[in-house]
Image (cartoon, rainbow, N blue to C red; front, top):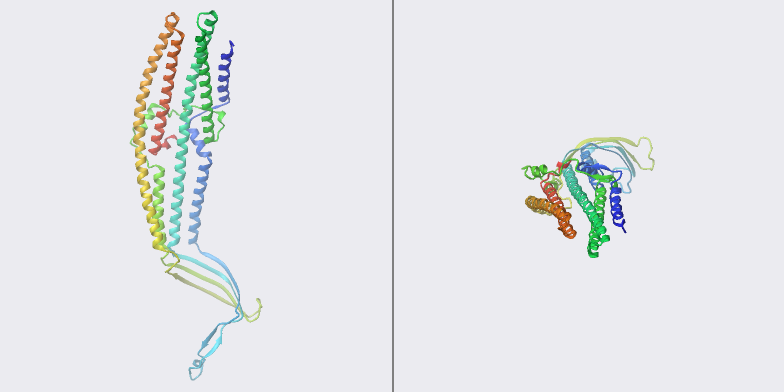
Length: 446
């Protein structure tokens, strides 16, 4: 039994040591860089943005000449008949007419067709649509980057906090182990009661449990960070090597007048522009289309099924302008335009609400930071006082004027106050991250 509690502490210490063995120090900026480079959903959005970019080029290609090889082989069961005024060809013109068949039972057409668009507003409209779709996708990529950056930073803060809590808990566990050893000796000497010995063992057991629980919590947080960054959880040692979480940065950025439009607002703006462009696109469908058409080839006319019969092929070509003015295209233009106008109204309302929420969140986080800093100041003062009390209690204990129970209670209060300060500092930095997120300033970490 003598070495039981020391063994438990050594086991727990070895456990936490193993979790950080063969590790390398990593800071927040590197974590964010790795997360943005390796997270699958970010990569998927970037791939979709690339597709939209290629789609713009694809639509632009519609303005290039369209060239095609054309071939038709036709059978005419009923040959077209026209009325010809044959009397007009007589030396003395008459009104005589005759029905004459024009054509043959078989004919082929083979040649090269060319169509060059000169003016087609629908193509230009589709290009602008695709450009805005690409812009929306890039806004979504930015939003996803910001969300991932925030999540990585928040997890990083949580790990820093738990690492600090673990140090405090380790010292507390060593303290209870030391007290237990002293009380065990005194119990063996018969100078203290059994119930005092039991209380010391309970206190130490609770310290060991709290220590192990913190180790487990820290490992879970590291596993989550590893998931975000594509690293191995047992290979990273989280340290604020970039000196981001400093009082200077806290004051500098929260008091800065710099502000940026958050990506969600940018995306809503892009969607509004897209809806406006789609209205123009609906109107463009009814604008004239002008193109230059050309054909170079040959036609065959034959009463027999002989594709290669001589003296039946005749050259054919033309070049000309084609103008088309759509009147009806099987769609209700006014109805579709009304749909897009309603969509614009909805998006404007969403934008207005998002702006209000963002501003509210900024002001709330700033006030929370002020309040939490005051709370942290109070805990710091309490810690100094409790530290002094612990020293005084220990002096009285050595002089035989105080009990171990009272000394232990004062030590517990001291450790609790340190944990409270640690938790408040965590809340301060979490609120700071929320402020940066709502101010569009998370890029400060890159």
